[in-house]
Image (cartoon, rainbow, N blue to C red):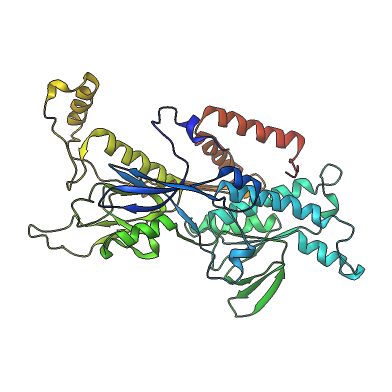
Length: 442
């Protein structure tokens, strides 16, 4: 599933692994904090500081995404697993494996009458959040539990009647971005898989061994839990927060985002900054200021647009900004125009051909970014998925079930960066089907 950045981008000039901690918009520099990777492997700490360097830039592309927003619920930060990064996934995999081994011990409880109750608690998985991440995790986890608790062939058949999944969603529906029929099908599919879905239920506290819930009728319930996974809500990354502090007040969008113009540039009145800072993905919010008269007066309200927090959006925005930077537009202008070379004779043949090709396509003026929504996919377990396929705002078709599952897997393979990964993922699916799940505890 993963691939090294260096091998995936062989033409990349330079790669630096570190954390961007600060920036100077006027001097056009970014401070990068290094961590001792060896210290990180020796302990569970974040690694000791290994120095800070300052990098100069001509164009800064901030595509840092978001982080889980689990600070508002008491105990969530300390007692919940997350599913945002590769390290989060690794920790969750270990925790799930440990939970089943922990529940299979003969000393599961000191009192015989508490044995079944404590065993069930240890393999009770509570997922907070009914968006795509929470729903797909519930579906995948239900498949995993079914496989490893299968009689005679599973690793933990004695836990078949004890393991359970609880999916908690504060709103009235799962997958709010999907159309109504698919939302209802997602609920039915998960219930068929044995997932306990709690709609209109808020998580008000998370403990080491429990989750406290409040239903829409204000009734509270303490649910014993072994593993709790937080998939609800997001908050800005620390670098986005720092960038907002350096930009004007008018650039600060709600929910910790940054306003960008139609060319993905951070909106600013500072001519030295305009065109040098681009914000992509979940950290960006579009604000279109193009509707002005000759005197600069705004005609009507400014239009704001929050795009879905999906890889589809980030991928299209990344490709768009890459084209802007490579084609040689004057990014400080509005709209950006192709720069006129001082001496055409000094241009290489490839540069000359590219410029003529852009002129033929009427791209002397940079087109604004337009997100083309191709639809949504979600896996719900049991070889079933949901597919909502569209082209922009035009719906094409919607499927639920095994046909949607085949489409989901096809897209999953196509979106892998390298052919190597496509082969590895395919063989992993075949291996799991033929020989069962790998429950090796690392």
